Image (tube, one colour):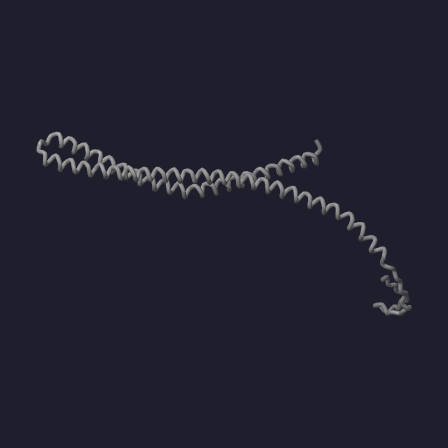
Length: 195
């Protein structure tokens, strides 16, 4: 292979590599944007999970107290004391129901956040498809504009000589003058100016 051909091939490969690097950088930028969008929602999930764990801990405590009360009711034989213990057990069961309701709310909130993350991902994908379409159209338009400019250049080049030919050439003769040239010699001549 000739050296010139090798240089052309190398230049072509370098251009392809540059294009791939640009494409990679754009993809990384989009991924970074997606991660930023999701990070806020993930922080919300972490906060919610912390609250959920706290409520689950309270729930375990209540269940243990209910179990303790049930065992105490079996041991105590006095009706008055059994009623008091039963009342405490009922209060704990109601508290457990409230905590279960809060846990249900947390679960709903988590589902909403996960749905938002899913929606963000879908929207991002749609935006990337739109961006791809716009870039393809932009490339096509730039090519068409470039083709138009190339077609105009020969017409302009042809017009320039025509205009130059239209300018009439005038020659004026200036009467002969005698000038002293440095060094003491006098010279005579006709000076012509072209307009």
